[in-house]
Length: 374
Image (cartoon, rainbow, N blue to C red; front, top):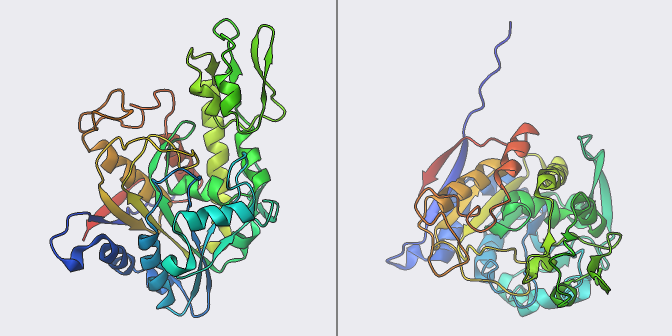
């Protein structure tokens, strides 16, 4: 009878934001954690390296500081590789729906050549349809649609701003791989498992949901607002309703999360041994950077983490957030104490740990980790 070998804990490197001299500045710490984690050995001369980041919807300023991105780019260049900053177009209407406005938004937010030292290339093309079918053979998808610019790259560095998310609980490295690396049709495939509905008995026909719907998928009828399911993006913006008339069937949400994780699985299949992750625990806002605004953070800034294991990295980030004291003047409704589940304190119906459970089940990594503080 064979005995299954227990998975070894993954290494997650951590640097806090304390600083008393030049060598301890945040920019230096980005450089140091890149080197301490051994990321330089991943790249070969003239490798095309996709540096996956989120430039933020126009009006959102909680994204990763471009100065930190420059530090990563310089570290990659030292290996002889050729990095480029990349993101994918959005499913919903906004300033990142096509590559032209997307790049303009990136420039406005400081992700331009003079700051980060590399081009910004939108990975799924002009209109979000430049994609590659990647075979995964999982329970929800036989194949997933990954942006061609990411799939064609030789290696990838995933830079993530850790924050909350209404549908996935939190947005970390897994979400950056899934939604972030999918083409527009791939994003739709992930979202299509769960759509909101409207309780007509609570609807007062105020029209707030119609004004905020990015897909213009809500119409007003005699008995109240109605969501047009065929065009709904399941983005959750309509939940702004002042009477709480808009709701999700939260029992379906694990299905959405599983689809998301399967896309993350597909995004890394061609990059085994050629991908690494850096996550910033700062400006930890309650909602995603896809919003054209950002609320105040729910916990204080914590630090920078790095790993080659996205599951261990997200788990470590979640643990550090929960170990912090929640900020009173924030959207955190409960669980302010150390150890309290902070994202549950914002989105009580959403459990982000499903991302980690399913990702581990698929063999993307392990939730066991050793935190190496430098």
